[in-house]
Image 1: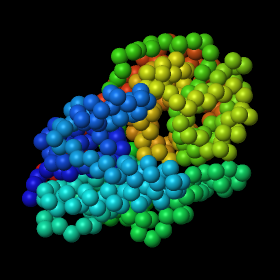
Image 2: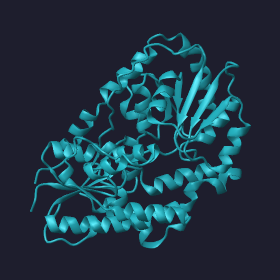
Image 3: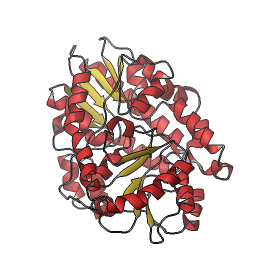
Length: 405
């Protein structure tokens, strides 16, 4: 049996740092994904429109050996076809992920490798029959589905006018095997890796073994641009994420409406998608601007020129965007249902409010509107916090958590 691992996930999860960690330690047998911008795709992409070219090239990591990457392009094509056909995302992803997981299991049979598979794709390779006995490592990148459902349903009862708009309600349409595969994959894992204590606790609550469930917070590489002082005297707040219930955007908008802030304060929302009901609230909220398509460089400028980043998520596997903001010198506000509690140390410009508590959010906004403009060192402290959590540290944590068999 091979001592190496097949690593598998769709998309560009965690900027490919997990398979890179395996490759650095000569533990990567094969990285299986849906779409990856290898040398051939990079050549072809030069002929495509800029937006498509940039999206494709974001799916590339120079430290990942090209000969170890296998793309199941049919998975990516199926997603686009089903999306255009209007299939509910919950059913679409559950169906595609099952097929993807079956392909991963077949590769593990052939190579007699161990498995390091992200949670949405783990059921099939973890429950398959093998001639060898692979180590099964699962990366739980979202909190457990039951915890997420409970939290979102409790919140939805408080906002009946928005209830039907919340995309998470599609969970009810996922039944039978498709539902079980996301709920119970952890039961077949030898080791479970999580990016936050909140995600870990969601698994412990359903019975996971504390000894096998480990927390390895995400990381980031600091950008070269620095902002050592507040960019302006104005209080400017930034939100970046899906305009949905899970991200707590409705709570932020309610707090923004209620807070007593300087008259020239501004809230900028960067949302590629926003629930229609929430869009109406945005339009009715003063001093708010909504941006949909924002490139990487422009997003960096927004982080660097904003007084504060706020994302009061109800459910978050970690919240990489918090580290992105901190790395640009932007202080952050979040909740305990994220990875902020795992990275915050004394003196860090990180504030946490109880999930769904609008009164606390109002108080923090009002306090920071008065405090941040006069704090000359706050942006340097934000960058110093991000610097402690490098991708190198994350990759070392992944390597240290794996058994050598």
